[in-house]
Length: 435
Image 1 (spheres, rainbow, N blue to C red):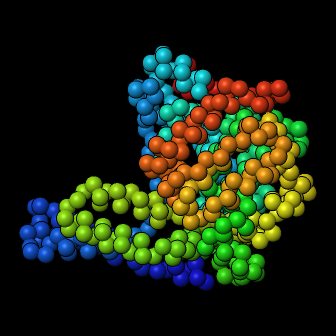
Image 2: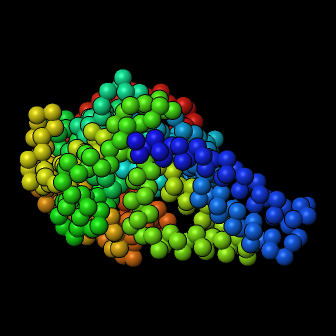
Image 3: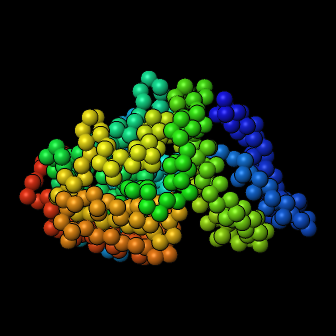
């Protein structure tokens, strides 16, 4: 019922949001007579803020059209080499007519970025992808909003997530692939690679795990405490709802995006309140750069997706209540997850000093589990001054974290641990002038 009420409210607010947007322009356009009244800037700013608070936020685009490689602007095109009901595998293919740069790009490492399925769209990792494209061939998981998936497709569990990751790795070619997992997927990605190793498959050359709850018992945050201190039945009864009739996924049980967004805001309400007040003042002052920065951030932050209920509840129980991975009790399709079986994949973990989502030591715990990887092929990096988003987006990501990730991948692309067990690479169609 709550989901239906939210959709009703959204439908009622939609015309008011559009009216506020039009009225804001009426008081700001230089040719409008209303723009010359004494309070026009404040009225326009207030209406603009009202519009942004009431509007619906659609999924943003990656909007990566080009990147610079060795001082040359290289065109970028999004391709979909593999599509599943709950996820698309995206490839950012680069094109250039410069033969020197083209030759270099063809020899660069291949990276699979596993984006989180935890409320926001994969476009949250836009800055991650854009930076990686300078030195890598990049793929990313683009998770589908569960309300857009018909019930007839069936449920989506954490086990299905793991199988998706494995299928994507095999499609790209495990023998030449480097995997980067950001936040939530660190746990299922470690499980996916562990199961591949246990089954004698070739595993990726390296895995980089950034700000994820490998062991949520260490330095628990507010997010961890909520998941650990509430009963499993509480989550079933209080955050799971059915998709209303106006979406393709009508009737599907989900953890709605609007509830997740409410939780995000509730973690730091003062910060968001101050940010919107500053936005109002910037509009009044005419500070266009600050206004645009605010809009870019909240266009992304306010765009959320519904998560399949089965997957969400599986994650709560497995990761935050049973701690099944670190306790060695996690079974996927009847097979025990054994990270100690990984021997041919180098490991890098990254944590933010000020991370309030995944506390200190939670990601680093992967090193204790992956005891089959020789210690000289394990590396940990602490990003000083970085919060959760700072380890994969923004200045600290670009200047501090990325060089560590780039150099780590380059090391094990040149001298892979899995070289002793080669596997045939997935066949792909290549353009003569693309990489």
